[in-house]
Image (cartoon, rainbow, N blue to C red; front, side, top):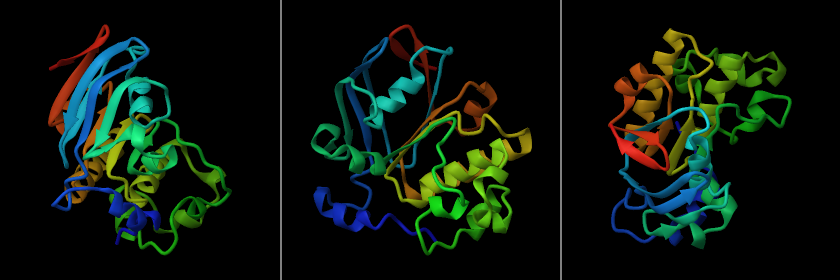
Length: 221
């Protein structure tokens, strides 16, 4: 059972729209950040869009701009809500970024999750032990940290998800598990997902659409 961020119900009144997922279309209008200029892109609820490109091409900076972590030109929308009209901390709860290496600020794993959640099914889906939430963070491997960071982000009920190499530290079997889990979650929750990946095979498995950073633009593949 997913338990959403307690702030979610308070924020709901801010969102116009007639249907339950009207607020979950992620739209970029002429966004410019770093070397990228004039990026326009719309991601529908439940759609996974993959982004590839060479190191340093601006993929991670684009994700950070969408999450309102980097200054940028243009506008980002979530449904009818403009990023510029929403307080940064609230926007980052709605449009959740999972970086390639997520921070851990408390000693115990469970202290990073919302309270009163039953996550056993989701832990199993990611190949994690049932008792892992009771572990000390220092006991975790890099792959366990990466999978738990995904679960942590999803457990807070974001309305869009930005993934920066979310399986980079996983072996092939765990990578497939994580891909299946993320795809199921995105479809079930009807969230737009922008997923940065260098793995062509992975992109072929998970992407509904694929764009490659070429110079200052995104090219549809």
